[in-house]
Figure (cartoon, rainbow, N blue to C red):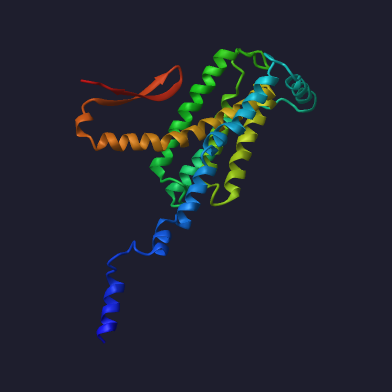
Length: 268
């Protein structure tokens, strides 16, 4: 009995846990979970930049190279001539509302209890960020490129703002609910594509405007989802520091039709 009790005490309270070479080797060997985490981290190290830039970059590049300012391919004129020859001029303004339908659908689903990647408040913040980025990028590109519209009404054709807003909205729905069902993504991008098609059928935009607009919209929403965690962490840090409460100011901003927010931090 004495021997058994001594053995039990030795197992319960080992006096020299590092005395066994086998025990030391096992303890120092990385766990399978750590190995998997390291491999995933290594594989995902460059994924954000690729995901943000690849598809929208290709779309923006394709649109820029085919616009009349560059005119590497005469697709704009060819598509415009085919539309005028075979499709009657469309008279509707439904695309003014259609471009935001996917975003409204995402927020509506969240309100009625269908859970997305974020709650309703967070979705609202992310969509606000995406819309602000999209409006800023699109309006500045319009001013820089100075491309005339197909109907000759103005020189702010490239890229299409309706299309960029529609694809920003569709990407927002895809990010929130695409993981639940692929049909959410298909529905959102179908609405966005219809919005761009209507702009061509109405002779308000060239094909290159619509293609580039799709890229700008996708890029804006991807950038908003990338920036939101950083902004959230920064806001939480500011909340936890009462000494900064009187030195931080956030105000709504409206400039030339663009909606945004201004952030100011004063230093003593």
